[in-house]
Amino acid sequence: MTRRTSDLYWDPFDLTIDADPAPIWKRLRDEAPVYRNDEFDFWALSRFEDVEPAHRDTVTFLSKHGTVLEVMSPEPLPTAQLMFLDPPDHTRLRALVSRAFTPRRVEQLEDRIRAICGEFLDRVDGRDRFDYVQEFAAPLPSLVISSLLGVPLSDQDTLRENIETLFHSEPGVGMINPISMKARLAINSYILEQLTECRAHPRDDMLTDLTRAEIREDDGSTRHLTDLEAADFGSLLISAGTETVAKLLGWSVMLLGAHSDQRAEMAADISLIPGAIEEVLRYEAPSPVTARWTSRDVEAHGATIPAGSRVLLIAGSANRDERHYPDADRFDIHRSFDHHLSFGHGPHFCIGAALARMETRIALEETLKRYPEWEVDASAVVRLHTSTVRGFSEIPLLV
Image (tube, rainbow, N blue to C red; front, side):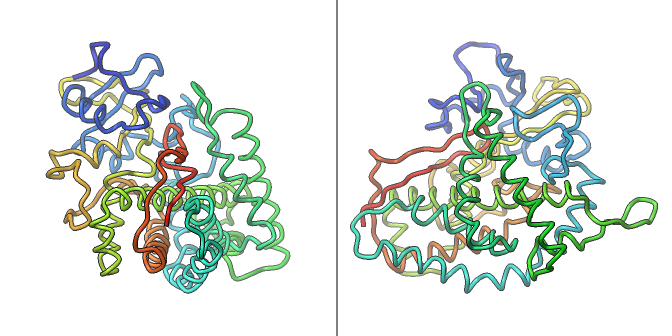
């Protein structure tokens, strides 16, 4: 069924809805599992049974027209970013990039991640209050992903500032605004400069790997990545790799602050942390909404989504679908389930998921080791909101 009444309304730009979208998402699942918004010209799917297969169906639900509502276009976007590609282009480029994003290189970062956590927590040692996001959760993944790519230490602070600015959102236009676009250009220009440096002076890092990587075409020939392809991938990895972990850590301390009994269990037994991370991801997805373009008519729940439509897949709602997760609105670090949709699903499953999980695990281990108890100063929390990202830019902790 589609939305036919004025009392049920949802869009990804509304700040009031975004403060607590779970009740609206539940109504969408119950009353309008195929929802139509005329104001912003999109359809939305909210049930697990619809969102999961849509992620897997790259023939019907296309990414090349954009996966963020405000950047979508009837024509494929002129970009080489993985998130905006469909098979076979996506398959070829992902396979190539995966060879640079090796488990060996990720695993080698574990000691570095733990050391960075220690350094940041040392800086706030002895204080009874600090901003967990600005002083820990945000700079940590920025330094980690910069280390993986080979970004010089002297450039990392400026790069992180541009990443934060990239997610600047304005009413009605989202991230399509001069402030965000300027940051995007600055990041891409910087990556292009680094690629040039890597060609002249090769290093043991992912950016150098990207300059050497070859892609096999359908006719059997091979070629190197273009500057655009390499820069687009590097920019995506830096921005997504920074924001996802920062938001995941922010949601972790917020939820564990509200569920002190479960936090105490984790502090006493760190083996509970990996399962807790999956529950945080299910319960509060850092990126709860992604968009697709339909290549054909889609029939669902008695409604027809026409070909050439913009469709929002609400993973945040699907993760709370009581049809799939019993007692879905209860946060439980002991919950057992097969998977969630917060890292996507199918061909577009997040290529950096293993690194994000490892960073978050180590960060929570080190946080709980130093601070088994904390309170969140809810009056001073600052939210971050875009049409696709949901989290916090400031979370003051009282320790």
